[in-house]
Image 1 (spheres, one colour):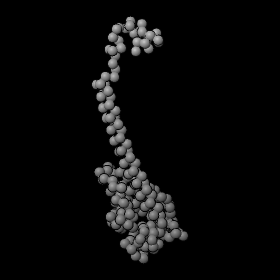
Image 2: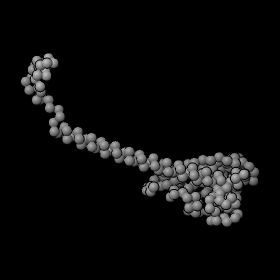
Image 3: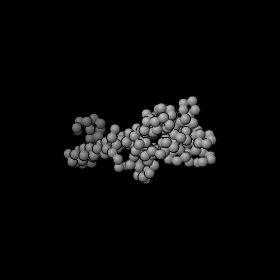
Image 4: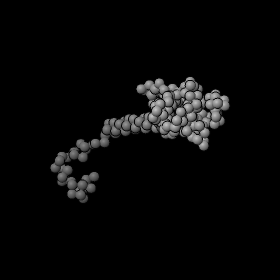
Length: 194
């Protein structure tokens, strides 16, 4: 070590600081190495935990968005069969939609009445909400105002929810613009099973 200091011209500089200068400054002692290793391990554990929670929240958000969008798009169709409201009723329908038919995609008052008269559990089961609660809000703009709600719309403040909105036309006595909001929600304490 002294040879290196001599070649660099630093030997006299370090001698002026004291004879045992090199031995006094052991920065990487065993205690410091152990403390540094514990700090890095703790930091990595906290970081991994944070990303784990972030990943779960991202999955939950993505899942609720997909379900809300699927339900909203399905409701803007006539359903299967197209005349499910008069043919077999809610229980006889394979898929629920509230549009009149494919050639006339206006929202039907009869289908809305049939849907909104069902229990929240029946609506969630028929719409295949995958364990999410569903609240459907139909607002007819102008004239009568809100057409009402269907499903489980008693959403607690602590709920995790996603809203999907579709705009269309409703034929409720006369043709008016309508806003269909689908809210899928789950209580914040509910465990996500994917």
